Length: 140
Image (cartoon, rainbow, N blue to C red):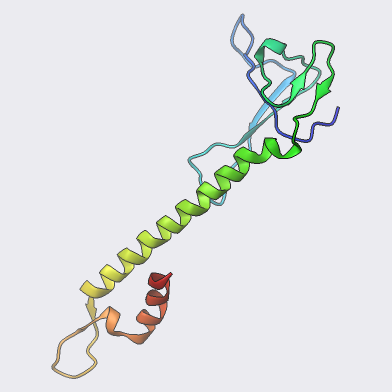
C-alpha cells in the first residue's frame, strides 16, 4: 500500500512491560539546520497492525477490511507542514530584526580608533563599512 501523505496515529508500547515492540522502529532524524527545539522523528512498522481505535482518521481513513481512503484533497496532509514553514520564516525575520537592532545599538555605544589625532575615539557606526553593512538591513 502506497500512502502519499503523512498519517497520524497513536500507538502504545507493550502493555505488559512497556518496552518497545520488536516490529516497531522508532528514531530521530538527528540535528537540523534550525529549530532544534522541535524533535523530528520517524516511526516504521514491520508487519504490525495498529488497532483502528488508535488511528486519528480525520482526513484519511482505513476501513475495517483494510481499504485505504484518501483525503478529499491530496494537499490537506501538507497544511501543517506549510503552516510551520511560514511560521519559521516569520520568526526568522523577527530574530534578524533583533540582531540588527542589537548590532546598531552596540555600534552607537562602542568607540574604537582615532581618525583625527587628539580628537578621541569615534563610534563604530561612524565608519562607512559599518553603515554599509547595518543600515540596509535596518531599512528592510
